[in-house]
Length: 396
Image (cartoon, rainbow, N blue to C red; front, top):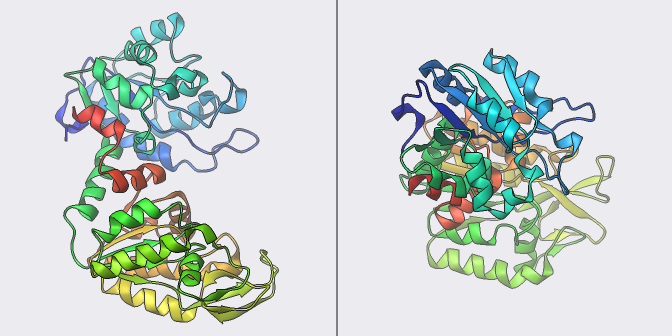
């Protein structure tokens, strides 16, 4: 894997694809700067070498060209403070003005290009657009794991214009290394904790994990499809009735390969999808009509903690319940704490997926696990397919 550590950037303009797709409030203030903070070490390495930095990213999903709320100019001040360097801004990502600004960059200077997705060509993977972007740099660095699963111009196409000078930044290198530890250099037992709402969202990853994991823990809304597939009563809980056969097949495939799938035995049930709802603890397969399961409960928490405690490698993707509501967060919190305990005793833990990352951060446990992935969709797709367009483009 070629990374920025193997290159001296002195006198070079590094064109870096970063993932600065951060959430902004109504006043354009950043509400979560995790992705910006993650990119800073790569940028500082290049600047320390005596290189210049040209940054390109997308922000949000603009529909028809430039929109004020999706302009990357809103993050310039924050980025300047984090880098202790005044970050310049180009009001476009291609064109004469942008080309002039990047051509005049001196060593130690940084410029941020305007939102790539203001051009439809970016998401189409347009070669001509990628070639225009390539004019901004002497070296190409991909440090945007969160977009590496998309075959866009700035991630999968542009690398061909830097045949001898393309590499990964620290974010990409860290993500790829962590996934490799989980999938290929696995310490056993390997437990995958899978939550979230729907089985349909996780079919492919479950199929892959059956070939790799020793234990698969199921939580979240998708658990009720498995419970109903086995004949249980789940009341008004979320169920994908068109996926009952799929759930049965997953259970059969796991059993055939000696993989233990753990399904909740009890749930915190509510008479309404609300934090003010009435609640009761139910056996997972005996939920009364009119009630819905919104979290795992005590027996399940204990069972899952025991499995996690005995694990040497742990992958967590997806919450155990509606953790955004205080009445239904205990299951997710208990799993997070169990993963931290196992990590402290020597297990390797990888947390990935937007909701899992949000949960681990909510409980201030991000520093106590082995790795927190910045790219949910990219992580899942990498596990499903074994590679990503943005990775293959650099490794060619």
